[in-house]
Length: 330
Ligand SMILES: Cc1cc2nc3c(=O)[nH]c(=O)nc-3n(C[C@H](O)[C@H](O)[C@H](O)COP(=O)(O)OP(=O)(O)OC[C@H]3O[C@@H](n4cnc5c(N)ncnc54)[C@H](O)[C@@H]3O)c2cc1C
Image 1 (tube, rainbow, N blue to C red):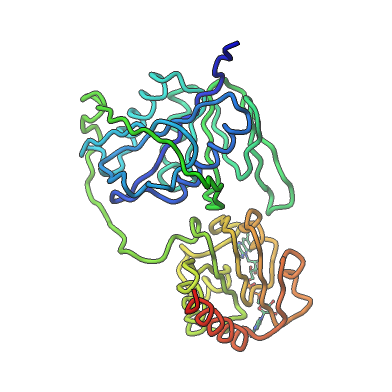
Image 2 (cartoon, helix red, strand yellow):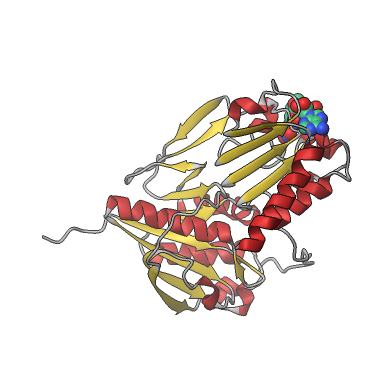
């Protein structure tokens, strides 16, 4: 008996400067994991802009097709062009759900697409299973876990930029197919006036697999050098509490919490951070939480998987030495 495929998932693989974002790769693998569970779904992807696809070797799990619109006109993000290319492919392939990683580009484009495609827009950390899968995410300073369910047949999901990787040990069997968007899609409705390219550096705190964050307990801007060193050794990013940002020790782009960014790393270090509810709002989806604090009664220890009572100025240099030793042996 032949079973009809019910779900056709399309994953947007975001590139910047020709580099596909790890958060998109993570979403691809999560969606593949979902499809493998229900056994009744196919997954395809879309890449917009010129990209060297060799960079994806071994990174993408599962089976599927990735449609690649290589046009130079798609090299730089443009909301109108990108949403037309994606919506056209979604419709042409009769897809049922579109998946994005939670990035600035997505937040700009997905609401527009949901109106255009008459699709439910769901934004969350955890994704349910099944055809009418909803998402859940923490709300009201992480006091409640809210579930959101789609009300329309077509759905757009924005998944947290968690880079918790779904492993596909055997890799995937992916076919790349070049597509040419309609010329009308590339027409310059909104020309780019100015581009600001950020220099190369550590990953954005919202996308990093490891975050080393500091608060008032770091004592000053200089001590953040310890966190930078730790983050560099671990390939992670530095984060900060609002107090550290308000003091001018770190930029706002690194602030984590209710009025900062939501992070979902596999490993989160809270150094000299008390664990105020507004800070915890930003780390509800973090994997393993390690807290270093001189006050054994600090609330951060209530959410930490590993807690170390001590002075960051003593503990962190020791941690850095141990990490260096460990990495030398690798
Ligand atoms: C509307 C609103 C929105 C907010 N949004 C955010 C937000 O997005 N993000 C955010 O972080 N906060 C936010 N806050 C602020 C929040 O309430 C806390 O004030 C803030 O998180 C505290 O930052 P902190 O943990 O660095 O400082 P503190 O609460 O002062 O804690 C410092 C910690 O460092 C420890 N410590 C001190 N010295 C050392 C040492 N030498 N070694 C080790 N530990 C040491 C202390 O024991 C203490 O636990 C918000 C507040 C409001 C009202």
